Length: 115
Length: 138
Image 1 (cartoon, rainbow over the protein chains, first blue to last red):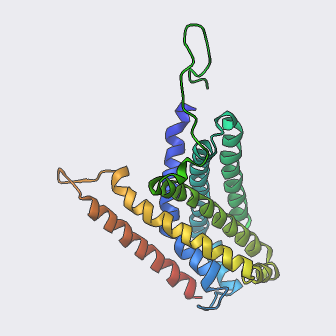
Image 2 (image 1 turned 135 degrees about the vertical axis):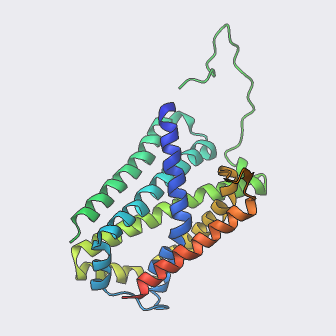
Image 3 (image 1 turned 90 degrees about the horizontal axis):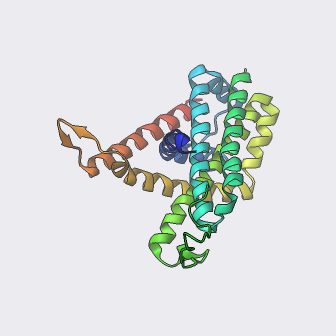
C-alpha cells in the first residue's frame, strides 16, 4: 500500500483541482441553467459534434476519471475517521478505488465508441 | 495491517479513550472539516451524471431527449442545487488550501499565499468563461 500512496495522492490532487475549477460551471449549466431554460440549451447535434471532437474526448475523460479518484481517496478517509470502521479497510478501499476505476473505464469506453 | 493494538505479555495493551462516532459535531472546526470531505460525494455524483449524459449522447437524439427531460424533474433540480452548494464549497476550500499544498518560488523568493489564491480564482474565472462560451455557441 505504501508504494501506491504517492500515485493515489497525485490522482486525488489532480481530481480535486479539475473538480474545483470546472465542476461548478458544468453543474450550473447542465444541472440548472439549461433544464430551467435560464440559458438556451445546446441542441443534440451541436453537443454530439462537440463531444466527438478528439480534444473534447480527452477533456471529458480527465474531467470524469480524475475527480472519481479524488472522491475515492477522500471518501475512504471519511469512512475511516468518521465511522471508525478501520477493520473494514480492505473492503472500503476495494469499493472506493474499484468504483473509481470502473467509472473511468466506462468513460473511456463511451468516449472511444462515440461517433 | 497491525498497528501494535494486539495484546501480548511483552507489550501491554495501550489505554485508548473511545471517541464517539459523532466526534466531528463537537466543534465547528471539526464539522467544517467533515463537510469539506463530504463534498467529494457531490463530485462523484456529478461525474456519474456526466457519464449518464455521455451515454445518452452516444445512444442518439431520442435517448438524449429522455435524459434532458429527466434533468428537468424537480428531484434532479433539487439534487443539482444541493450538489452545486457542496461543489462550490469544495472549490473555495481547495483554492484556499492551494498555497499550503505547494509553495511556489519566483526569483528565489516565495510567492505570497494571497497571490496563489488569486491565481486560482483567475483560472477558475477563465475556465468557466471558456466552458460557457463553448456551450452557448451552439
